[in-house]
Amino acid sequence: MNEKGIPEEELFAELGFFSDADTNFKKVFSSMCTIPHPVAVAAQQKFVLSNIGDPGLFRGTCEMETEVIRMTASILNHPNPKSAFGHMTSGGTESNIEAVLHMKNRFSDSNSGSDFNLNSNLNSNLNSDFNSDSNMNSVSNSRLNLIVPKTAHFSFEKIANLLGIELKKADIDSYFRVIPESVESLIDENTIGLIGIAGSTEFGECDPIEKLSEIAIKHELPLHVDAAFGGFVYPFLDSDSVLDSVSGSVSDFDSDFNSVSDSEIKFAFNLPGVTSVSVDPHKMGLSVIPSGILIFKNESVLGSSLDKIKVKTPYLTSKYQSTLTGTRPGSSVAATYAVMKHLGVEGYRENVSYCMDLVNHFEKELNRIGLTPCISPRINIVTVSVCSANSTGSNSNETAQTANHEKTEKIRAQLLEKYGWNVSATKTIPALRFVLMPHITKEDISNMISDLEKLLNA
Ligand code: 0PR
Image (cartoon, rainbow, N blue to C red):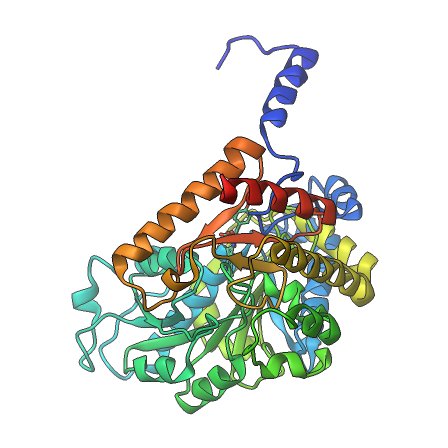
């Protein structure tokens, strides 16, 4: 660091340089984030001082946080949004960590008759990997485990590492949705809970949460739904637009989900087995980064787990803190409150409808160059194979798969290097992945597909 500070003008010239090196989202098809709504940005600036880690100082912001939780619970079909219990986080990763931490604590509670000694605060959880042998009860010598779909976000890998638990990955079907029978077959006496996804990172798919809910109830396990992306999409889908986008692509596409009216969509608290849901306003919620939400059905589903992570905060305005992080940005709360209030259900429906219209346009443009999506997109994430049809199936041998991944990666890199398009690739199958966010236009799609065509014909 320099001894003497630099003048403002010089500083901002420098900042301009850095900001020019960042994206302005013009050519970005790879991100689950987008340009935030202007009211969110204005509210963020207004509450830049606010820290909800010290609630007594920021009572107004805390009131907004409570309202954000209620509004989100109602979107998630909570039968009584006022009884929902939750808070804002920095995003899906933090929400998922906290949901699983509570699962682990609850598990140790329900096994308190045994010699389980899983300490409940994060420090001891961090260490549990090292002393796991001495922590194990007489039921089994294996580690505690969490059952996730194979398509789960990589945040669960971090969680497994952090909390010293094993991830058991359940199989997926040909639409990349978890197979309930596979989930059930993985449950054992060390299972702490189940994860379902509403809006998977790679495919946007929704797992059969209704079936997972039944399994969770049968085995008395908590079920956390990761709706980080889908939480601001699925509840606002117009079933007609989904059916429209489905027609004409994959002929054998069949889904109960698409035939139900949007008000009947079941992936959250209208299912009795769902205990918690994570939803990110900084993705399709059009709020600012960082904005995540973690909601539990009610406080009592946590049992005494909340007490276990509660710490005394003698020098703050509140007596205890039970969130994972300490200082939390009130500006994100204000931004999320602002955009949710301003748009209402109607505004979010329009947002999703705009994106689904992009999906329709995308499919038409793909057809024009002789391609179709790998699966009919249910929401605004489209995957496309750029390899020959007979070599992309899950049955093809490993060498062919590796070659296909390499070819896909090459096209992805060329789209960026030659034409400036940011696109991602999937790891489950060799395919390009396009997230059709609100910052994208039909013109962008047509231009990008024309560039893709040039590369494929080269
Ligand atoms: N759960 C799901 C289903 C997700 O898709 C993601 C993020 C998370 C959890 C974790 O959310 P946070 O990253 O907010 O903690 N999925 C995106 C991804 O990994 C995150 C992202 C967003 C990455 C924008 C890049 C980007 O430009 O692709």
